[in-house]
Image (cartoon, rainbow, N blue to C red):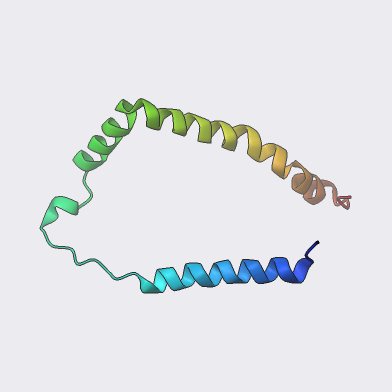
Length: 90
Protein backbone atom coordinates (compact mmCIF):
# COMPACT_ATOMS: atom_id res chain seq x y z
CA UNK A 1 0.00 0.00 0.00
CA UNK A 2 1.42 3.37 -0.97
CA UNK A 3 0.32 6.82 -0.03
CA UNK A 4 0.28 9.79 -2.34
CA UNK A 5 1.30 13.42 -1.93
CA UNK A 6 -2.05 14.31 -0.35
CA UNK A 7 -1.44 11.88 2.52
CA UNK A 8 2.10 13.19 3.01
CA UNK A 9 0.92 16.80 3.12
CA UNK A 10 -1.92 15.80 5.44
CA UNK A 11 0.46 14.13 7.90
CA UNK A 12 2.77 17.14 7.69
CA UNK A 13 -0.12 19.51 8.41
CA UNK A 14 -1.18 17.34 11.36
CA UNK A 15 2.30 17.46 12.90
CA UNK A 16 2.41 21.24 12.46
CA UNK A 17 -0.96 21.54 14.19
CA UNK A 18 0.32 19.37 17.07
CA UNK A 19 3.39 21.60 17.40
CA UNK A 20 1.34 24.80 17.30
CA UNK A 21 -1.07 23.34 19.85
CA UNK A 22 1.82 22.45 22.17
CA UNK A 23 3.27 25.94 21.78
CA UNK A 24 -0.07 27.57 22.60
CA UNK A 25 -0.48 25.29 25.65
CA UNK A 26 2.75 26.60 27.20
CA UNK A 27 2.49 29.13 29.94
CA UNK A 28 4.94 31.95 30.44
CA UNK A 29 7.14 31.43 33.44
CA UNK A 30 7.32 34.40 35.74
CA UNK A 31 10.87 35.66 36.22
CA UNK A 32 11.72 36.62 39.76
CA UNK A 33 15.05 38.08 40.55
CA UNK A 34 17.39 40.90 39.96
CA UNK A 35 20.26 41.09 37.54
CA UNK A 36 21.37 37.47 37.87
CA UNK A 37 19.85 36.70 34.46
CA UNK A 38 21.31 39.77 32.78
CA UNK A 39 23.82 39.33 29.98
CA UNK A 40 27.32 40.47 30.84
CA UNK A 41 30.86 39.76 29.75
CA UNK A 42 31.36 37.73 32.89
CA UNK A 43 28.30 35.58 32.09
CA UNK A 44 29.50 35.06 28.51
CA UNK A 45 32.99 34.10 29.67
CA UNK A 46 31.52 31.71 32.22
CA UNK A 47 29.37 30.09 29.51
CA UNK A 48 32.33 29.65 27.16
CA UNK A 49 34.43 28.24 29.97
CA UNK A 50 31.70 25.72 30.83
CA UNK A 51 31.18 24.70 27.18
CA UNK A 52 34.90 24.26 26.52
CA UNK A 53 35.48 22.15 29.64
CA UNK A 54 32.80 19.59 28.75
CA UNK A 55 34.28 16.93 26.44
CA UNK A 56 30.86 15.54 25.52
CA UNK A 57 29.74 18.99 24.35
CA UNK A 58 32.96 19.54 22.41
CA UNK A 59 32.36 16.30 20.54
CA UNK A 60 28.90 17.40 19.47
CA UNK A 61 30.23 20.83 18.45
CA UNK A 62 32.89 19.27 16.23
CA UNK A 63 30.47 16.78 14.66
CA UNK A 64 28.03 19.60 13.89
CA UNK A 65 30.75 21.89 12.49
CA UNK A 66 32.02 19.02 10.34
CA UNK A 67 28.53 18.47 8.93
CA UNK A 68 28.06 22.18 8.25
CA UNK A 69 31.45 22.78 6.64
CA UNK A 70 31.57 19.65 4.51
CA UNK A 71 27.89 18.80 4.00
CA UNK A 72 26.48 22.21 3.16
CA UNK A 73 28.54 22.82 0.02
CA UNK A 74 27.65 19.41 -1.43
CA UNK A 75 23.97 20.00 -0.81
CA UNK A 76 24.03 23.48 -2.32
CA UNK A 77 26.31 22.91 -5.34
CA UNK A 78 23.38 22.15 -7.69
CA UNK A 79 21.65 25.38 -6.63
CA UNK A 80 24.85 27.38 -7.04
CA UNK A 81 25.28 25.84 -10.49
CA UNK A 82 21.75 26.77 -11.49
CA UNK A 83 22.14 30.36 -10.31
CA UNK A 84 25.62 30.77 -11.77
CA UNK A 85 25.15 29.07 -15.11
CA UNK A 86 21.35 29.42 -15.51
CA UNK A 87 20.88 25.76 -16.39
CA UNK A 88 18.07 23.43 -15.48
CA UNK A 89 18.79 20.90 -12.76
CA UNK A 90 17.75 17.45 -13.97
